[in-house]
Length: 358
Ligand code: SF4
Ligand code: SF4
Ligand code: FES
Image (cartoon, rainbow, N blue to C red; front, side):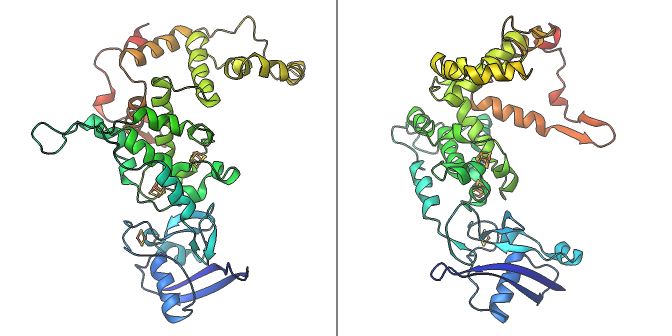
């Protein structure tokens, strides 16, 4: 079959940049990486890109196709070629380009190292001197994070890193969760303190692009949510982001609503609230915010209070709650005609749950 690509060529020494089109004859099974190999072999030996394993293991071949990060060795070309579309290939985002599709990974590795990606000393050796045995529940907390191959596709698409290159970013934080959630690691509090720093977990804008683009199913945004939940659980909540999240929980529990008008005083304090007063009055005059007093209470507020208590009594706070939520969602099948339906008997409790009874 004929496969055509447009590739952004770049030379960091001269600053020259050009979009070049290539077309090659290739077997139907080719991936994007195979097509680049054919171009380099038969048409243009100067094309620069990274590769190694060719099987989604080494993480070398991250690049962008039509503006979204992909692993070149995972991306099949058959359907794209058949559709007649000519994709545009470019280097990953949020990292300096060295040449063509090759980026400078130094900033990426610096953040990776800042996570101290090794077990911190102090863990107890198993009494029999053999391996540490872990429960499935312990593994569930860090299973996805352990799959990361450090390809950088998530970093390429991260909105928060685009506005603040100092943000630790999805890959580094997913790696951090891999160690925070490891029962052998003895530095959970120190790690969470570090990840709650100015450029840490609360800087994430929750755009979920990292989850969408990760080729290994790591779901870095979920890892960041786990770190946030663990931080709040352990009382590491000085950041405005943590206070914000805590206030939303309190607000939902007490009135069944997210009372955003009280968000500023509850999270930023009285002084910040006074500074924002003029803006708040203007919003109120235009009917954009409801009066804070008396607070509006939902008719079924008992339901949200009971749900809060259920989560507490079942110990679902911290990372465990995020994992259980993911598993519950994973068991719900969506049918175009019938909507959501439960297929796994595990999620259909035999007895009514306490919040359903109240
Ligand atoms: S969800 Fe957060 S970490 Fe992930 S890409 Fe968006 S801003 Fe970055
Ligand atoms: S989290 Fe996913 S996208 Fe990000 S570096 Fe790891 S494997 Fe790549
Ligand atoms: S070449 Fe190793 S992940 Fe693509």
